[in-house]
Amino acid sequence: MFLKLRKRIKSKSGETLIETLFALLIGVLALIMLPGAIVAATRANKESAENSVYTEGNSNNVVTVTGFSID
Image 1 (cartoon, rainbow, N blue to C red):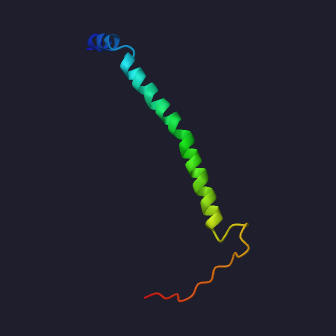
Image 2: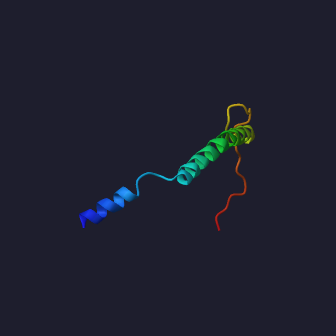
Image 3: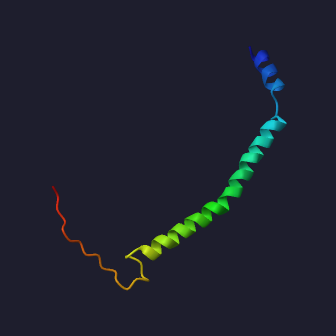
């Protein structure tokens, strides 16, 4: 039994070139998309801070709730 297992392990040594190239392709695609994701997140954060009433930049930090009811 152990002899068959040893032969099987020895016959399947290493990765193929295709497997390595696909892994490299996935890594490169992730690195290409990363700067775009960072820019989009920064832009969204800046927009939400500008539109928020709770940020330091706005002079009016008061929210008035009128007509609140629970049915």
